[in-house]
Image 1 (cartoon, rainbow, N blue to C red):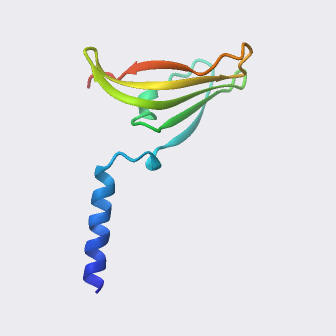
Image 2 (cartoon, rainbow, N blue to C red):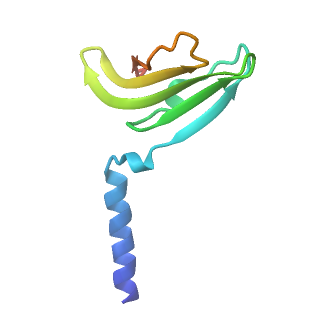
Length: 103
């Protein structure tokens, strides 16, 4: 019985690690100081990942949420829904395409 449970757990872990499930998406918040540089791709890897960047100089926020991951003639990209706060012009979230750098 115990052996079957171990096999079941190992199989479940392997199956879930192979699937791209948005339930495992990361929701990260970072605070950036003026002049500090950060890499979006350290935080955004797959569909469903969300990064909120708080700029400590003026307490504004930018949120990036990955809605699509794909490849085209220019390389692999992440399509993100980008929102800004405060949103003085009441603009809707924009769609921006970010290409992953070649390693």
